[in-house]
Image 1: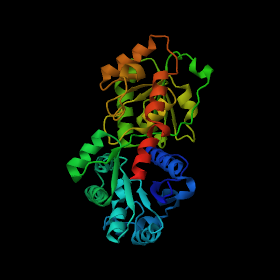
Image 2: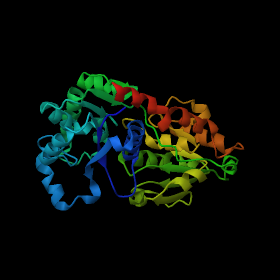
Image 3: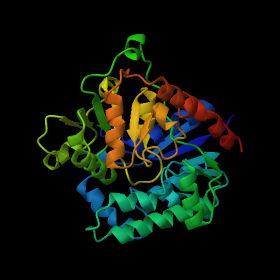
Image 4: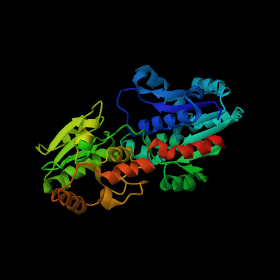
Length: 365
């Protein structure tokens, strides 16, 4: 397949990748694997580590025209110039719909593919404080970009049926293909790791960035569930150290916050605890936990897009009573840290190899 592709993405270079950045990198890996690295070039729209205060001020004016997250007229012109050298433009986030619009309006003849990581209005509604006076304007800008993504993309990819339904309802277009969250498999459990027993009390891990949906779920769990179960709770994630003042002085809680590598925490954990009650897209941390063969106790939102057997992977819990019951069930048995069902489900459904065929199909169209 001798096609040239330009991969346009949102990128943060602060050393700690969040879920969206991880899934974006997976998409890039798969595309490079199919076409060959020499046929794929990357264009990062927004690198937060390089933004100065002046850059932020300059960003206000393009924002009023539907351009944000680093987009401006100069970059649109640059992308138009670059696009002439590529058969495919892969836009790895639907908030960059203005790029698809600009290219098509300027007679780009190749194929434009847009990957929806979320239904973005829901994501930004949860992300932005209601005290932010610009919130309605920002969400309106997001909606315009997603509409343009649907109008001017040749192929639209969504993560799951829920996002596809929202895209249909709000933008009158269905996704052309559903490709769920996937990960490059970077874990090979040793035989010794597979035989490690639960600790006493069980070691539970909450892994997630300091994002409102995550912190609200975590603080609910700490208040409503933690007093009623005998566990150790480790909290790991980008920016989570900032919530220290909101946590009780409880020796059950171990707060680590931002760490360069979560592998050791995942390996050592007995159970992943993911009480997430709102959101969009799919939870990347659920996929990562499965890659490490973890038992997962989570909410409906935690498992959105993952067609798992809840009893085999851990438990589905949406209420205080359900979380308590599920944790106590694990606490009373002789369990191993490694969950083979979880690991095998990841390999069969959410590894790069599992989704490569779907990418091959759309790249050949």
